[in-house]
Image 1 (cartoon, helix red, strand yellow):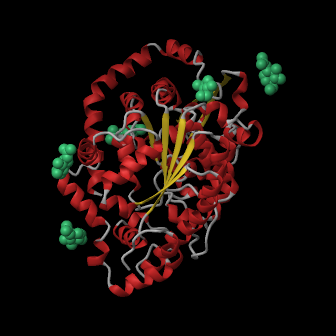
Image 2: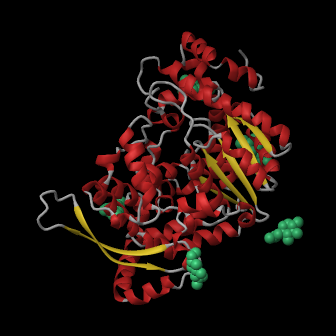
Image 3: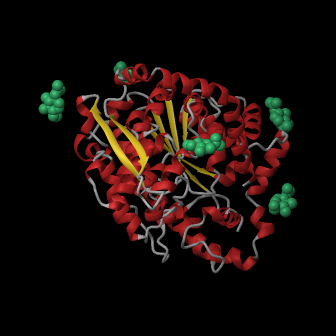
Length: 485
Ligand SMILES: *[C@@H]1O[C@H](CO)[C@@H](O)[C@H](O)[C@H]1NC(C)=O
Ligand SMILES: *[C@@H]1O[C@H](CO)[C@@H](O)[C@H](O)[C@H]1NC(C)=O
Ligand SMILES: *[C@@H]1O[C@H](CO)[C@@H](O)[C@H](O)[C@H]1NC(C)=O
Ligand SMILES: *[C@@H]1O[C@H](CO)[C@@H](O)[C@H](O)[C@H]1NC(C)=O
Ligand SMILES: *[C@@H]1O[C@H](CO)[C@@H](O)[C@H](O)[C@H]1NC(C)=O
């Protein structure tokens, strides 16, 4: 909490500093509107974007001041391929990732919440040749169901509120795959707006170094970490809910279908009231498109310059990996696991990481252990099969090993990625200062890190420890590590 607050303060300070420029830019944009429009029409990088000019105005007689009326002023195609919306492409075009990605090395760091993936990701993020992307898959759920960004808890994606296992349906898998392949191809213009304006990029800017010029550019033009959440909150939250809930049928079925249609930008055809909320939601997003279009080349260019593109994700299932290994010759997987005792303790402390099933206090440890270990075990079994078919392209990391010997574990990881590890102490300093904001001496940082893998000793009662071990028997049997118990 304290950390996110500091992030917020940093972002706010940054916006204050840039607000002077921002005023000039607004004045400038107002003054030369036709010129700006003309420039956008000339963008060749965005063949798939359909430009929709919209104006939102409050209905004068509306008793509900929150229901704006959307006036579609103009719809204009910029290129012939504009109908290739996300869904259309998933189903029909089959854009070949092999061609788009070329010879770049693409990596997925597949992890689980509270397994130390942000910290390990930070080491990659601090390496200049690696284009590192932090958690892009949250936006899959924003774009698919209209949920508040940041509230798609992995435990809810994989565990139903009843405790039964949830296997993400095909539309979610397709969307995850699509978003990752587009990122590895540096094809950001094909991503949904909710990915491109996701608050994570603002909030965790230190964790996505190569996004900096792009985020600075859209921030200078008035966008911030609330831009997307405000659109959601003002227009669709009442209908769709604010967090992902796999048993909320309105969210999954009704909002899901409205959102899917949005990919075609056909919301103007809807005339029922609920659809109007969706129309104003999309109008709200659309109002940022010009800004994003102006700034996106900064991101695309930064990505294209990096030969290694690494995505960290705690929402991706192992079932997607076979396709990546098969279709991308330079794809590699890093599978990150952590001692369930550490994971469960950390989820206990960080309540926001709990899903509906493991939310309360009753039976928390046992439920949380089950939801982590069941999913991890399924992934491990699939990974073992893939390792046979694709030798040398999968690396398993265990956070507890990293915590005890970060230098050697990171050396191995960098070697696997295909680059020499930069000077370790300097990287640790950078990670500790800039990214984790811990301001610790290197030896303190390393001592704390070591402690994270044994903290449960001091914290968890012994009956809880045996409960978790019991829930995770298969995990412990399958994951080879010198577990001391
Ligand atoms: C535009 O797309 C349509 C349908 O895909 C196609 O028939 C037509 O030839 C295309 N026009 C141009 C100018 O490429
Ligand atoms: C990819 O690598 C192959 C073999 O090293 C090479 O022949 C080809 O030109 C490379 N393609 C690109 C787009 O760099
Ligand atoms: C962020 O932008 C919204 C409008 O999108 C504005 O209302 C809000 O005040 C801004 N917040 C900050 C911290 O600048
Ligand atoms: C790295 O930092 C540790 C802890 O402060 C220190 O003992 C070690 O000598 C340093 N190594 C190098 C190469 O500077
Ligand atoms: C490790 O963490 C626990 C729990 O936060 C704390 O009680 C303990 O003092 C720490 N140990 C060391 C050696 O820092």
